[in-house]
Amino acid sequence: MKNTAFRVHVEEASQTEVDNVNIEQGAMLVTNESLFMGFNNEQVRVFPPQSDKMGLGWARYDDTQYTSESPYSFTTAAFVVPNNAGNVIDTHIHSDIAYYEDDKVKAEYDGDVYAITIAFKAKLSNANGYLDLFLEGGNGTPYDRVRDTITFPKGNDIEHVFAKTFQYYADEDVVTNGLEVKIESSHSGSIYDIIYFIQRTQNHKY
Image (tube, rainbow, N blue to C red; front, side, top):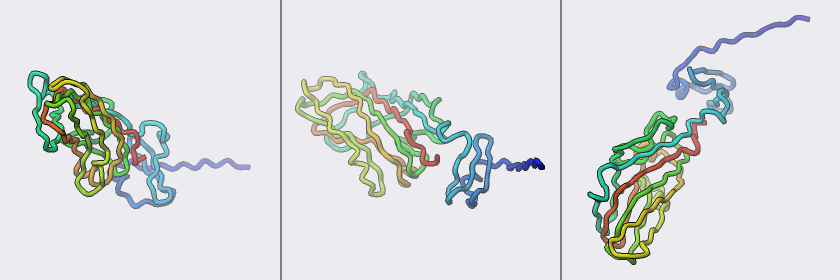
């Protein structure tokens, strides 16, 4: 009987090299964070396990420009909900990109799944009015179907507080160009104290 030890040293690569290498069945690559193996034409991460460090995370973006003292006024025309990201919490984002930047909601990979909570305060000039809150992309994917109609039950120019949550997936257009958060209103009004809370619930890379 003879015991034989086989040792294979995998040369360290960058994540960019891992992402762009020609995938070979059983071939392994290692970065300073993860070990990958080519399997069925995909680059599969084998360590840390898929349940660990999957690039899931969250971030919060607060608008600091429009407040109760200086609200954003709107008419019945559709508009992009303003958020200058003047205050940001992103220490738990675990992503190479921001989830919100340049007035656009962003995605890292085609096929990622996200949830966004849009919190704000608003007033309408007519108590019987409503707002349509929705997402909008640019390449024909009907993201505008990710929407909610918000009614104002009482009082002309009375403040109401809202927090609406949407789930959505990212396609290539969202990765390239992002999404806009938009509102279309039945009446004129104002909006302020706006917060975007964004979570990545599925990282398509893993």
